[in-house]
Length: 352
Image 1 (cartoon, rainbow, N blue to C red):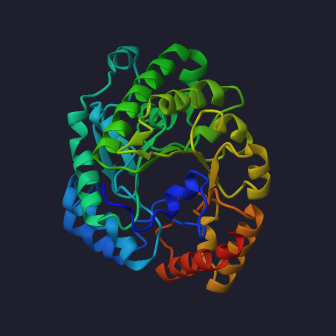
Image 2: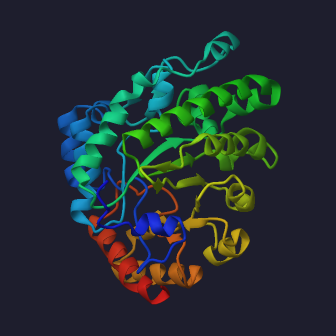
């Protein structure tokens, strides 16, 4: 197995010594890059872009050609999983993802089953293709949505402001929601393990909507299922540790419980203080985050100041991966991203 030319990201996740703080960005391959928009046009649709291993490879590598990022992340979508379950994913122009057959009745819910992973072979083919194209330049991150976040889309039929349907089911018929979450957790275990087999060198679970849950409900309907996934994942491949990152947006109040799942790192949104988070989790996990994506609309000098503030908050030593507190906006100026990466790489060396 050839050695990585830059393994700073993986070493930081495992809290091993590094020369500087590594950085990658959530949604780093996306609409803020003109080259992405051009490739997306060639693909004809977002789903076709995800399902073509050649085009998925191309867009995964585009941000790495522009910026000296320390990791690549598979270009795909969390909703490939419910699509493989037969819910009929489509993207409505200007409205985001929708499902033709959302889970609205008991019979459909009870019929839900773990899909044949061959339905998702295009994802694993993309992982293998990207690994070859990276040529060991930087590590490749695989990912999935959390069981609860996937369930939100599967039950609501698309995005939601209030999660009325999923929360109604949670309170009225919790056993039905638990069935969906159990199937989702088993599916995600298979899905991420297949990504690891195909070449993913770290994996992240995106719990985008877990922070919408009440105290107690979060632990029962989101955290428990992520802990199940962590316990079921392959943690080593070809003699190398495969780090697992958990990210609950809006989950800053549950960091200790997240750290107790056995994961290697926690993603943080911008509402969390890095120094306080580090104090709370101790040496259990690394921390990833947590620059406000909207701060990238500011001028480079202001971006640099915010980077310096976050690096100072985390302080000395390893165990910090710099990232955004959520996905990058499509309206971001790529030059501002270049300024962010430069600031992280240059100012973080003083803390190592």
